[in-house]
Image (cartoon, rainbow over all chains, first blue to last red; front, side, top):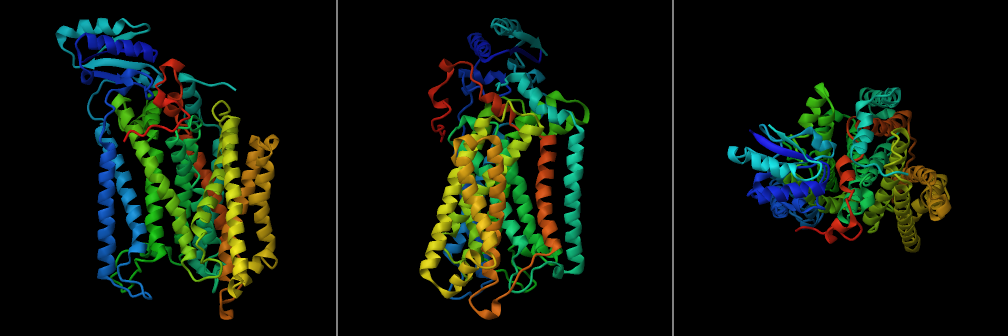
Length: 167
Length: 451
């Protein structure tokens, strides 16, 4: 058996399914939960919440800022043009470019960190059921212990409205 | 008025993607034809030379730069409004955000075309990029035009990503509901999205970070566009108020564009159950506030110029107030101030139809505002040798009109291939019961930022 899972019609049943799998000895990281929308109204929707994306974005912003500083410095000093009484490297006009590239750095880092930490693009065979996008909530176990499959199946089938499937 | 839920949302919002009516082909043919005509006129301008346009010394910025500033302004509708509404966690944003974000992406693309159209030899457009040239043409890296390059490209990149990221879960919905080639294409676009709790958290965090980053970028973009003018020694351009004045005008025109787009979508895609009168009313109120702010800035600009009484400034001032440009100026005031104030200020008129009428007025008024900033000043600088007249030619008029058709065409095509309302965000707005709502997730208070 590659996976055992249940499809639930609502969040309450899914929460019960998750709780029963925990009672069967599974850790949160071993339980797969898929839904067609964020399920923040339920406790299971808060699993895996912690991330370093804010700090990565700040880091990306700093890289962008350093790049802008380098770019403005290297271009303006390598190809100096005297315009009026302006200094060759002028802070005021360069602050705009530094600001824009700081933000661009933060934005691009955020997107890259989303893709990496969110496992996108998804590779290989993963547990999935198209019913998820129709509103069902999938709770299951991937690559379960052969000896525990029956126990998981029993736990998953207990909440109301559960449709249990095996792959 | 009903509130669709679950599978009904999928059916309603995927219908335009999975079924094609004759109206789609008609719209594509109609607006595509206008776009082709505009392209033809552009090629004609390239072939015959820039003389076919009305642009000549001293008015080198005519319809093209007017349209450039106008479209960059329209782009403020989407991402900025969407980002602010996301940050304050306003529940009513859910059906509105994507309609708005699309406007930003397309308006920026169209706006960014104008510096290229404005070139006599557009195949040398890469000269615009501020790179050190080996052809002994040294770009001035401190020029406001270099700021434009960085600001517009940052905003365009950020806006496209801000639009694309929340589309990934919706592409997964289309993937699961379709077959054949369509399934393959949407499968690739969905990046193998499954909807794990981790993916949802990361997506929502990414959207929060990007919303925070994109708001100051949006403000900076139009401030920087205003610097293209206010950094130049031209009468009535050197004004410290131009930055906020341009930003307010941009948001103002952007909201008008958004209201019209939403009204058309509501009518033609039968989205009455999703785009409710309250969405239009909220946006109309926002537009009214921006209209008042715009009026305040115009009054400020005019009063200070009048009191300063500089001869160069006053010459331009009177040209717009009571001489050759006066009809356009007062039309602008009526469209941008009087019309929205009367229609949107009176509750009885603040209907969908009222908001759309006011929005059309605002779009006309804001285009005229951009024109009146540029042309009267350039045609009457400080010394008499630089006085001149600008008369737009058919080439410019058709190209400018073609960009409006291009906007509609791109919007129609987008609505055909992507759910125009974010499916997952609509569903996320459904809560099972009030007692299950954690306090931090209540809709109207400020959203909690998980820093």
